[in-house]
Image (tube, rainbow, N blue to C red):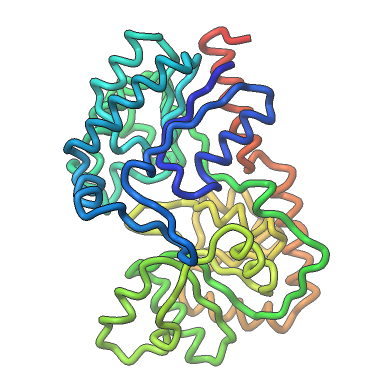
Length: 356
């Protein structure tokens, strides 16, 4: 099968992970990178910078000459590669008319994978307008939260499939040489929810905490409260191998669920166990169906419960390590890796469209 993946390609554990997984399954894959139209990585910086102010404005508003060029170039790339399938990964910059043109020219199967919630609390019709209007044009829409199923169907989705978040086997793996040198880590973005109260409570109780992630500096730099979290400023993200190492060297890795994105799971819920570290995650029914509480992972429902469980599991190493091991085994044996997700997509394409 010839598969064209069209997506931002900013982080290699998203689109690139699918690209590698499809290639490992024996398929011919080409990439169309949105990021090249807007951003550029610089030496020594974790996150890319916008190429220009003009590029930043169009990236955020999702219209203009750059967006038009991106859509035209995608059509040309498809004509040259002639894919059987085009996988659109979070296609917020793609016009509906572009999808229609792609269909008319080569008639590929077009599918979407959207890891955000286009109908969530942080969403606006303007922000996601191109994608929402185009939902009915995709042959299959893959989602990561079941609450979106009726919302996609209301928008005319022909077929909506739950795919979920994933980890990447050659990025998020367990190493026998890693030592648990740190107590607690949270590597994740800032959001004004239970994570502020929870992390602050841990610090007030003397917890050895490490904090990494995006969006924190704006909050910590302007917060008027006398927060212990301010001692972490500036907070930097960690990615790839550094992210794996930081998680791996920690006894407990925390996971919070975004309320703005209506998350009932996140990629860290699969990356942390895959790396082999004990996961203490905010509770959801979805996660409780995947991991047995107190046996394969632990959950908290309040900042007090989080503090109590951090104290308990730091004191009880043997119990903590048994849970971490069982959680790791669950991640490895389940369908939670990008490889397994790619297999499901291929199976769906064969069943629905007759690919051999």
